[in-house]
Amino acid sequence: MISRTTAAMLFGRTNPLGKEIMTNYRSRARLEVIGLVGDVRQTGLTTEPGCQIHLPLPYGASQYVVARILSQSHDFAADIRSTVRAMDRSAAAGNRDRG
Amino acid sequence: MAARVGGLPLRNVLVVAQLALAMVLLSGAGLMTNTLLRLLSIDVGFERDRVLSIQLSLPYQKYDAARRVEFARRLAAEVGRMPGVIRVSAADYLPLQAVLFPYELSAEDAGEKRTCSALARNIDRDFLAVMAYLCSPAGTSSPPTTAARRCP
Image (tube, rainbow over all chains, first blue to last red; front, side):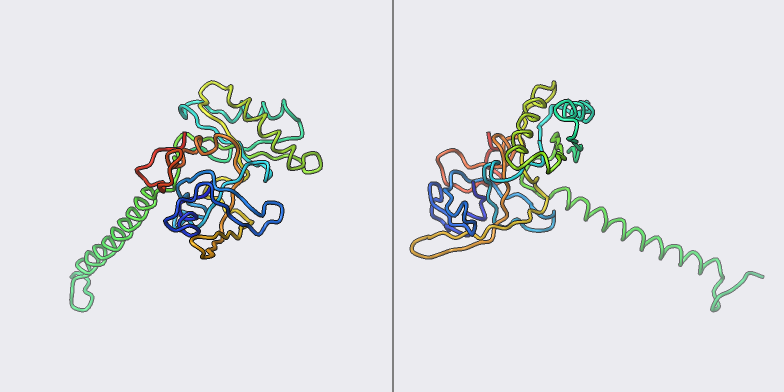
């Protein structure tokens, strides 16, 4: 999936869905556009979003699990840490941020 | 007799200095409040409220890329079963976090080669919905705007 800015930069006003993009990575030299998403701030609040693409997770090493929760009243951190420990004692999880 | 500075009573000089200092402090506070309000009103492209992110720390000797993905998916399934959790997913990097490896992209548009340097994020199923990104309606190419719907 590509962002709005990427679509504008690479395809102008042409419909990008189904179009092919070439990359500098040999293992994924050609990608097909399957969707369009809005721009997201990447490197900071004051930096305008540039080109962005979203690839399937198996292309990278997952570092984060994200969850949309009903309310902030419950502290999930302890539950998640104990779940991670139960899955593998050598693994650890940090509650990086909660909006 | 009252002390005088440059022909003015010292008390008057102190009052003027205090007023000047108060004006400087008020201006500074106003500017800071304005900056804070502007930062809060910036559209970051996703909904920040009620998003929980869990950073995994897995030993590299034991977990290669494939096993990391598998672990994250198993954890996501466990977290998804917790009461109060609506949706779960996984990713390598989060928004507002610098991605280290840019992709040099190119495409042909009307016979013209166009390029851009893009940041890539690797995401699992439901990531866009969890983060509430803006999406174009399925099957359309209209660019997502602030009026567009959130990804389902």
